[in-house]
Length: 66
Image 1 (cartoon, rainbow, N blue to C red):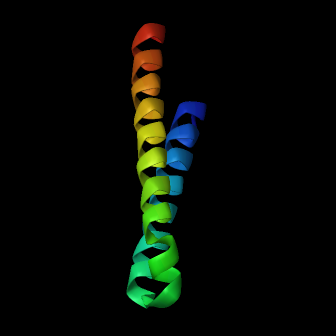
Image 2: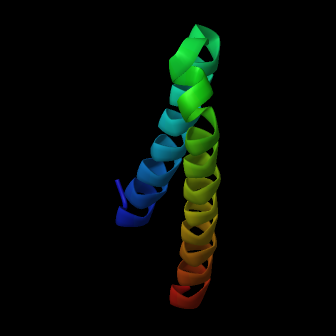
Image 3: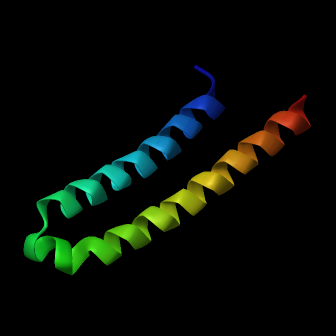
């Protein structure tokens, strides 16, 4: 597998993992959800932004290398 595809899969897996963590936290509810749901959402947004930057960087790199 090409290095750019590995980086892409890792970035997307991290975002999916954080999303799953947030969904499980909301489903469980309780004190843990109240204390951590906003923090988990912030993590998801940050890592989605990082993944988007990685994706755009990979697109730019592929186009520049031809």
